[in-house]
Picture 1 (cartoon, helix red, strand yellow):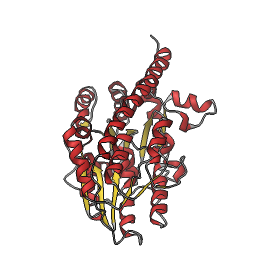
Picture 2 (picture 1 turned 30 degrees about the horizontal axis):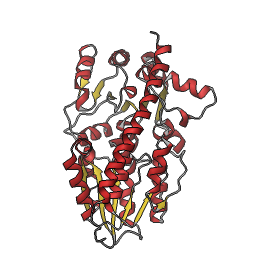
Picture 3 (picture 1 turned 90 degrees about the vertical axis):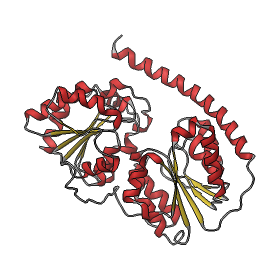
Picture 4 (picture 1 turned 120 degrees about the vertical axis):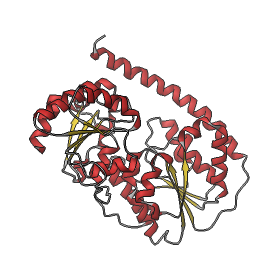
Length: 388
């Protein structure tokens, strides 16, 4: 079957799966919220604030600068701040941001969804803290996760923006549990969105124009001339090993030294790439904070729509992004917030979508073949004209 036929079929199956997912989510939500309703009322502790942030590493990198602003604001400077965070980026928080809150509760999302005892213990621990105020700043809030933990707090003041989940029923259920709606322009880049959330929540002005990480060169870590980050949270965000091999060989012929970086799950792919190209394979050899430091002391970073993009921008590094187009205006279109050291290559499916005068925000579905339609030669030629 041709790719022209496979893509519509794949998108159709995903849409059908989304309906099934809603039914499953709603069934669990009703059961879990009924359990929470049986919990005894807790005594609220005055001047306590919980910030619930449970999304991925890249999302945290885009948000982390806001934590210090909350802590220093007149409104919350006398509050006890607790971050309820995703354990996946705990090591990054501890390296860069430990001083920005008073306390942390770490959530293992896999255990939360698979282990009933873990889930109920977490709800009980959160409820026992007696938080007076809760902020759930994520733009896309899973009802079973962020919203359910907000319910567990029993806080009298809860704050969030309008949930941007695609399912209207879930959006309405989510938004209805908050006592205060923070009105934010839904088309803002995630960086500006976070600024606006904090501006309105704390009654302060937010002044940074991009995410920021401190640069502290580490001589014990490698320095890459060209760093290719091959990981991705979904198959539709990852270039194939064949494309990476072709691209790296083109870079080699131009005299560039290339290094590979990625997560533990990318080790096999990295080994296959290294067998057929001249490359320094760093995948799986460094911790998450060390990987972020490596990005910070590399010359040029090339990545899909991953945390590496936001780390590179945070370090003010030049970055080439391979994007399937989904949520591009939120996450990879840094040029619209004034960051110029970036070049984005979009999939043909996304460019075709834009050519029909549709909004970028309306492009919701991508498949693996979309990103792999990007030619290594075209990417090489395009970045060479801008960066070499």
